[in-house]
Image (cartoon, rainbow, N blue to C red; front, top):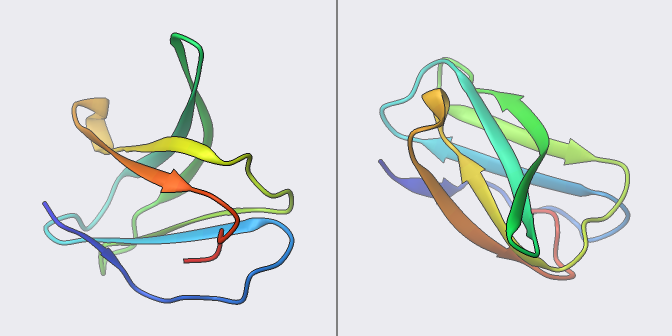
Length: 87
């Protein structure tokens, strides 16, 4: 598994996180965050046949540690989100 940022966009309102996963050609990814000892899924994105999924929202995310949950919800990786939310 590899996480590769594909493009960098202009900062502004909302968020757009583009993920490219080698070896994945279908399925659903989930973007979540931590609040206290709980975890919450806040968005989902379908994986294209090219292995790309894009999370988008009109409202900016609060800064913090987020996770991307892989298909079948067995593995995940974490990302740090601050003011730059288009990557």
